Structure formats: C-alpha cells, structure tokens
Amino acid sequence: MKPLVGSFVALATPFRDGKLDIEAYRWLIQHQLDNGTAGLVPMGTTGEASTMSAEERARAVRTAVEVAAGRVPVVAGAGSNSTAATIDGVRQVREAGADGALVVTPYYNKPTQAGLVAHCREIAKAHPGFPLVAYNVPGRCGVDLQPETVERLCEIPEIVGLKEATGSMTRLADILERIGPDRIALLSGDDFTIAPFVALGGKGVISVSANVAPRLVSDLVAAALASQTKKAAELQVKLNPLHRCLFLESNPIPVKAALHLMGRFSEEIRLPLTPMSEGPRAKLQEALRALGLL
Image (cartoon, rainbow, N blue to C red; front, top):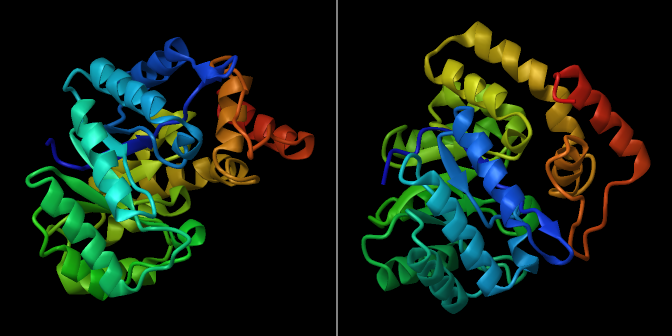
C-alpha cells in the first residue's frame, strides 16, 4: 500500500430515494482526487456505514476503488463491536478491492486494554499481510486506546497506522514517546488540531472537512509536513469556522447539509440521524460562503 501520508478524507455517503447515489458519490471521490486528497476512507462514521447494508457498503468501497484507480490508497471502514463481525467486515472490504481496513475500537461492550489487543490480533491473524489502521475515538466508542496499548499493537505487523481522534496533543506526545514517529503512521482524527498534530510527528489527517474543502485541507497538511509553520497555522485558523460548523450537530449531519448547500448531494440522511436544524444550518452556510464554497 502507498504510504499513509497527507490528507485522507472520511467520505460522506450520498443517498437518493433511499438508495446509494452512485453518481454523486463518484463526483465526490473525483473532486477529492482533483484537489490533492492523498487517500480515501469510505464507510466510516462520516459515511453512515452503520445504517447501510453489507451490499451497499461493498458497492461504495468498490466505487471508491474504481474511481481511485490505484492513484491513492483506499482504506475502508470495517470495524464493529464484535471481533467475528469485524473479521468478516475486513474480508468484505478486501474482496471489494480496498488497500487496507480502518478498524475502530469496539463500542458499547467496553473491552479492557488487553481485550483491544486481543481483538486486533485475531483480525490480523485472520487476514495475514493485509494492512489495518486502528481507530481510537473514545467520545463515540466509550473505550480509550491507551499509549501503552498502541505500543503493543505495533508488535502486530498488519497494524500500519492509527487514527487518533482524542484531539489531545498530550496523548499524541505520550504515544510518540513510546513508539516514535515512524513505526506506524499516526493520523489525526480531529480537524481542529491538524497543524499541531503534524508538527509533533503525525503523518496527516483523516478529515471530515476535506469532503467540503479538499484543497484547503490538503494544503494545510502539506504545509505542516513541510514545516511551513506560519502557512499551516494560517490555514488551520482559516478553516476553524468550517470545522466548528461541521460539528454543531452529530457528524455527518452537518457535512451532508454542506454538500447539499453546495448543490452536490441530496440532503437525505438515514435515521436515527435527521437533517440539520435551521439555526446551525445558517451558521454553516455563512462559513461556507466565507471560504468561497457557495
């Protein structure tokens, strides 16, 4: 797989009349490729994978692989709170042609740190040689992948990256203290902290905002990786209102509203999520307009 470096996008999924809107999805993916995005991450939280059928998820991953055509890596979401189901999910994304799988920490059942390691070992054992990116997002999952556990995961050859979404630079420093910057690819899962994350030794981001502003996010990551501190800081601040508006309500409600306002998506979203309410929508529209996206 190509190196996990740069701006990766956590792809939103368009629906129309209850079905996957392949035409809009292809547009979004091509738009990313045309604007510097370094990798595609379909079927994560932003992609509403939890409300999609296995057939829909496989079709979305196949579409991303087809449009990417080997130009950038496709790391597809495959995690669940069941180890057996995750193993099967990884099988499905492999069969769909993905270059790797994003595996979130099991949610709801709150495994111990030893359980998290055992979970990843079993997945890797079932898929030897297939790249896996661990995903730590305690705000959604109710379990936190600790730095010492990340160090243990580095013993698993299939673990090639970590999406770290706590937003804590202290946490990142603690991880780097244990494993250094090059043992696995450390990718931010928090758009608000891209510049400092990369400055500390991260390799990039898996971004929600890149759905809407791929060139700006790509330029921000590129500047940070090139140690262009002033430019990276300026872009981080410039994008801050957009980041804030894209999390006024639960992700992916705002990003789908943004793509709808831009004329690219139907605003259709699957229950239990509902369309963005009017007050937050007005703030989002203002942020999009300020960046010249409307």
